[in-house]
Length: 141
Picture 1: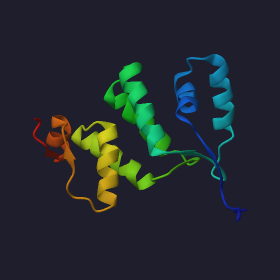
Picture 2 (picture 1 turned 90 degrees about the horizontal axis):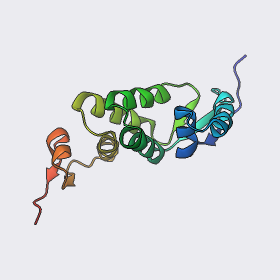
Picture 3 (picture 1 turned 90 degrees about the vertical axis):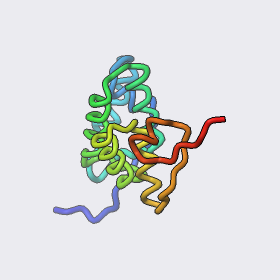
């Protein structure tokens, strides 16, 4: 039988997501695991782009996972039937940009959002983002 009730959501903070992914604090991991175990298509977790950007930063900079490992984790979350995102289309675009153009995931999130809003000129002081995503590099004075 197909449910006609609307889905309910539980917002997931970065620290809960990281405890679940890293299992670096067993007590907090268990609490996070119980929350994640309760997710289903009818009772979903909700993750914001800010949470994804923070998670990527911690995984890549603090934990020192490779870019590909970080993107695999984010793709796995994105493909879950029981997790929703504040901007799923932006996350999908960011994954494509990050995987195809080897852009930093945070920059890829920015690129995806800018495209969604029809912004075709993005200025930056970041040479790598300029080179990889075609953003306009401002002269540094």
